[in-house]
Length: 137
Image 1: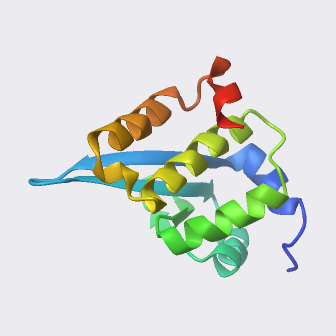
Image 2 (image 1 turned 45 degrees about the horizontal axis):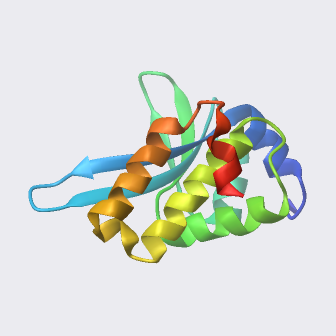
């Protein structure tokens, strides 16, 4: 039950995803950051939820549970963890982009056109292995 080690990082390399969602509202644009893990059973997800915060849901059509963290409080916990216990797969690149979007939002830069465009660019390059990783370090 002690998750202050590399276990979640290894588990996340296999089963997690970092997502940036952009939602167009009537008079504004909303940016959501989600760290998500899907599993057939919820026991491990409950431990992760207790560690990071966030929510557990169930998809009846797929018969799967999912952990999601869309609050900025749980995102901060996810960042504190992965800054210390690094991912070893290409998901590390997605994490760095997700983390950069978090910083843009925390600085309120996403409220400007330039800041929002930076987040859109980060989102569009996630899950791509390319040379943009150098600018993230």
